[in-house]
Image (cartoon, rainbow, N blue to C red):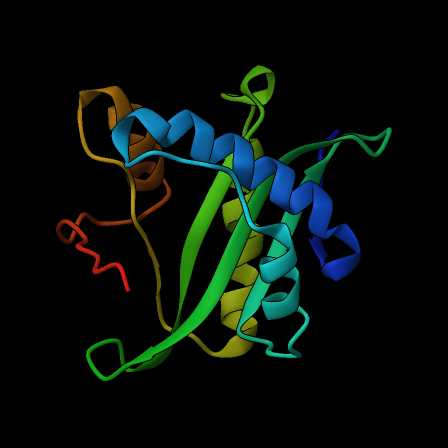
Length: 152
């Protein structure tokens, strides 16, 4: 049985580990990836800002098998505050077992509690990632277009 738990800084290492796995899996689609600057990430997470939260999916024995991170944003077009799923990763041997769905459901419940009217997510482009896009569409997400970024 899989349980979902909202976690804080005490679980930062496992969250970072799973996000690192995600980024390594995506690496071929992005620029070179040199790993996470966990010291910097810890400082930002510990800043007391409640606009970031993380959830873990755990087996009965406590082993973590998935992670989802969620950030709060504000936009007029979105009607105010809304959420963005920044990272979602499920260990390969636990995929297609509704672990990701349970993590997204936890994010939905959290968002409802915050009064948000929407959650956004960006999925990788390309045929290789079509399954990921279908996963989100099956959960009610609607494709709205590509995302662009500017490195500073």
